[in-house]
Image 1 (cartoon, protein in one colour):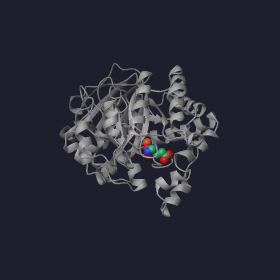
Image 2 (image 1 turned 60 degrees about the vertical axis):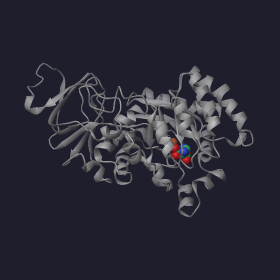
Image 3 (image 1 turned 90 degrees about the horizontal axis):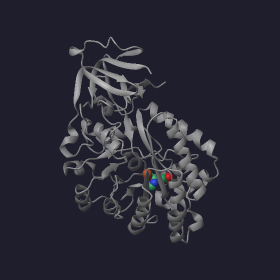
Image 4 (image 1 turned 30 degrees about the vertical axis):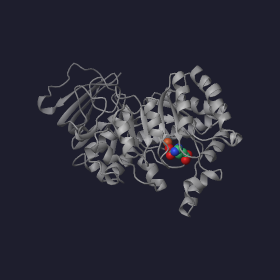
Length: 416
Ligand code: NIG
Ligand code: FE
């Protein structure tokens, strides 16, 4: 396997001899950097780094690729801890309907929204779904994503949920980037159970979960805890059933109303709670006593015109915060994590250091990948972004519409 040396790096950021697992409160402003740096990768991993002033060459390395990073910033790849990247077709018509005055809820109530995507996905064969999803994965990698979580939840019956999760498994088996799979059968109640939600939850617990566990298709279980979707009590029962099959919880919480998703998720030991538009002060206190990562999805809040989650308030209260894309056809048709980082600064008033930590280390933690990605540290995967020539890392969120990525390195190799 080829070894890689990056030299003359203008600024190597997010660098640690021993990386923390996540950064909370005032620590989110810390972004350790080495100016005029070098970075060495061996067998796909980061092995060493330092200042060019102390660099005495790696003469004994054979098969060494050297990249001159003069004027460029080198940083860990983005970790996108919340996506629905496996889906069939798109929902531009609902976009137009919303422009013309309908709300996301109104569209859902007349059979659009998640159910619209479910109908499209059920009609799509597995290979076609895989090809569509693979193209999206390639796109987000080119935009700097180096680890990703992908949810099911547009199948909503046994065969179609399995189809989605098998596609996620096939994406994982490409070994492009680490992929975590989340079972989101409780994303919506499908039309055939319209008047029998209890029956659907039974199906989910008694048939879907055992089949998924049997094929080892999921790492996490997620529930859309929201009015017209699943109540806090139903969420708890579903998360507990998932836990019995070894699945850690992640919850869609407080997106469209205050539905007690945060409290339920924390009580169930969730690794993350995501969305948080209606998160209140009491929820912030509950989160403070937990290991759960509050995760803001700025693409969805922007696209649906929702109130902004209190990210600044959470950090000021001492909490960690992650930002992720929520890439999906209904509420966030973008998986561009650099844009999410810009929104963190522009709309949520995070400083560039906080925003960078929110889309790398903290979002890696939110999918239990902080040991592997999210910072530059010995032993971590060499999944790295080399920027174009820019003045400072603050330019990355500042120039919110510019593609500033020159090269993406995955597993120590240049991604082409
Ligand atoms: O995270 N909130 C629920 N689920 C998705 C939206 C899904 C859809 O509209 O297709 C979300 O925003
Ligand atoms: Fe989501």
